[in-house]
Amino acid sequence: MTMPPGPMPDEAVRDLYEAHGSVILSFLIRLTHGDRHRAEDMLQETLIRAWRHPEARTATGEWSRAWLFTVARRIAIDHARSVRTRPTELNDERLAERPEPDDRFESLMDRNEVHAAIEALPERLRSVLIEIYFLDHTVTEAAQVLGVPSGTVKSRTFYALRALREELVARGFLPAKSDPPAPV
Image 1 (cartoon, rainbow, N blue to C red):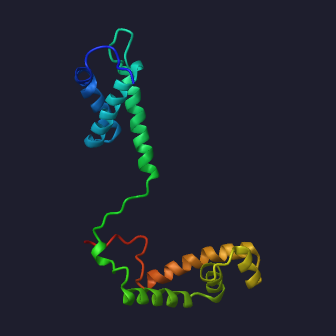
Image 2 (tube, one colour):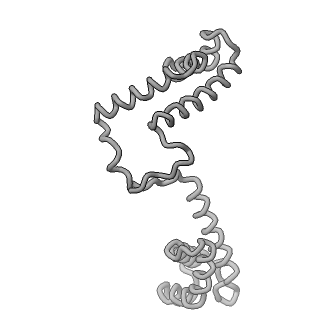
């Protein structure tokens, strides 16, 4: 990589930061809805990109504020997109309430509760769940076994899952959708 013309790298970056840093930081803080730490990271990335790209300077050697703002905005957009594509991070506040993975008693209780909830479903819903989820049949295979059209299997699966959830909520196994999380 060739060095851009002008002062030594440390001086050039310092000059760049002194001339434009506070303005770009304010802009980025607004784009991040007040998250100063993220905005500072984005500012640093913007300044590094400016140093690496000669087009960040005008013909007279001055830093192009328009170029800097464009790059800063694009970096903010990229960060926002990457946050949206990541799965939601869950905190571990209620981790102590969860059983150990090898807790056989807890696992047995869970299994018994789910089986009892499935048994409480009407036969037409129970049988479709068993075919699809327990016997791992495709919709077409389940339709053949049950002697109903594929569309019927699909709709019964939808209603069976909804009924199973309601049954588990009624048994206190799952929280209702409108219930707030339990306090820690």
